[in-house]
Length: 306
Picture 1 (cartoon, one colour):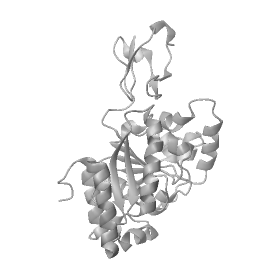
Picture 2 (picture 1 turned 30 degrees about the horizontal axis):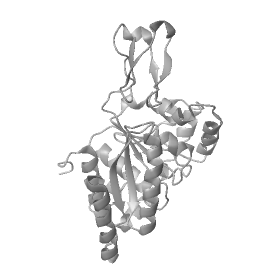
Picture 3 (picture 1 turned 180 degrees about the horizontal axis):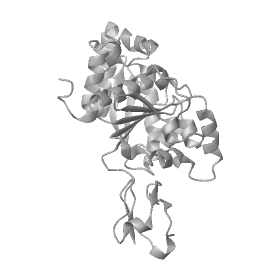
Picture 4 (picture 1 turned 90 degrees about the vertical axis):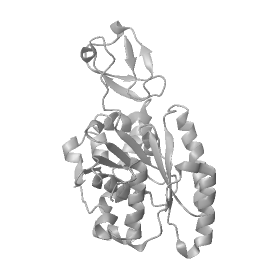
């Protein structure tokens, strides 16, 4: 029997007699991805995939704080939702700031869903039209310990759970913590695209180089993982020469992956106090304009919001 991995699409020849008649999870030897397989559904064909290939898996990552990851993740997700895409925002940070920025106080979230303390309807929170949230929070510290205690397959904990529900969405956008921890590794074993926010300062550039080396170690097992979007954040026009110099260096090194910059804008830091996205709090601001431009880049639809 030929079985195709639902992640990397590698074909594997497996003795049909070795596969139970009940639904099982199969781990791909090529990319390490674990996916559901039911022999009774196949009937001589390739296995039914868990989700349509069109589902976008985007991780917002950089192993440094203060670069605007959560601001970017929330406003990018909200912008895509405004454009009509069904978006699931997953917060893997113990600070749980995505819920705060959206004005929500969920009873549970990602941690409770992963540990099966709550069902999906109980853990999932509808944040806006077309936008749903699996919130982060302090309980994720316990999830990290559970992952560490697994003898094998700990890096697939998030992937195995989210893959079961992603078929209901056009995009899954995952916000990460500033450090390099078991949940960040889990995110990199789940997403296919990376959106990397970087502030226009020297320390962020150093962190970027270190982060790319870490990503390369994951790409050995997941060659489909790619840095698709590099987002220059906090473009401060008050120090134009410094910001533009660093931006040009980024464009020289990373070419077309560099997105139009997000300019420094007070309203971006004020909006979370009111539990609003930038489009709700200050729709005519530079911040809203810049994030709409980022959404156009992500969706490859230059005419959005016209």
